[in-house]
Image 1: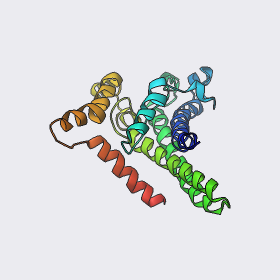
Image 2: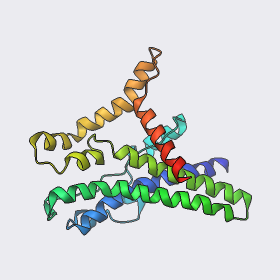
Image 3: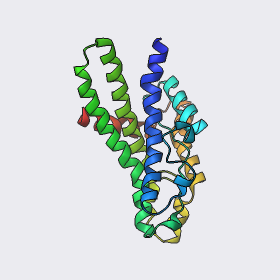
Image 4: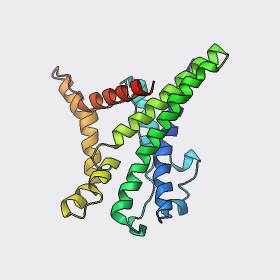
Length: 220
């Protein structure tokens, strides 16, 4: 029973935050004239339409089990055709920002619901709800601060450089595969490699933990 509760208060908030992030991208894109996500049935609330085996299930589960202190992940990217936008330079930034804004909004809701949980009469239910909403807040903050990084394929790369028609900017934003390799190297490979030499250096973990802690302290 304790295992089921632990899954409920840790894994479920992470899944909701990840899927809501992608839904926000698709919804804003549709509002700006691109219905690609809608036609692909990616504006659905059905989580099965958004789950990525590695990013939504395996990575968060491994991070939970490894007790690293932070959890992040991703859903299947919402398909977007930037050629359908009336003002591509502006709309690329708006769509990229939508997921981050959604996570910040949900983090605020999570903080509010944490306060309201104090009115629940049952101590056991109150404890579970507080754990759920605090984790919900934290996971949304993590996704926001993670995706704001200006590294492709993260949203920050499009927010900071997606509006530019400079050849280097276009090449940089489109270097998604190389960017993903860089993220994996910075977040996992380099810290493990350095630890084998007795060097405790994890910039990515330090950034995620400290920014999340700072924002959480403001909300709570």
